[in-house]
Image 1: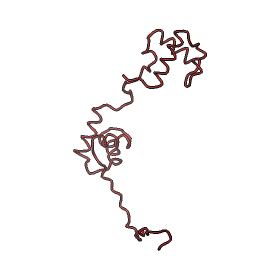
Image 2: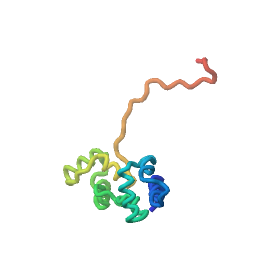
Image 3: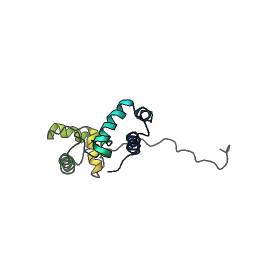
Image 4: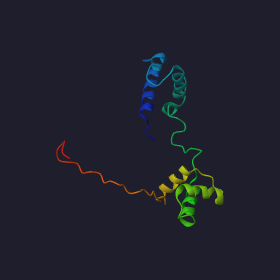
Length: 141
């Protein structure tokens, strides 16, 4: 696991406090640290070492993250049953027919990661006037 610059700074500061070359009050004056943080981090640092400075949730997957099975099922349903729909309409069809409630942005993110493109096409009117080409010198028309 790689450490961030902030974590490396905190480890150095805690080491200085442990050696006695810096007080806790001086440590709290470093950017991004308060007195309470120094007290809490120093207690963890003396107890656990350098791993006590690192955030406990670092490298872990969020509990709110969608499961890989659900992502695979959504991608499969889009390619098999609902291939002719755009992403927003597909998310509505999922909630109505398949009882899978996902936001349109989540569906878009899942399908884009699977390499699929939306069927949505924007039809614009052709421009009435073509833009004029730039002239070679300023002031020419």
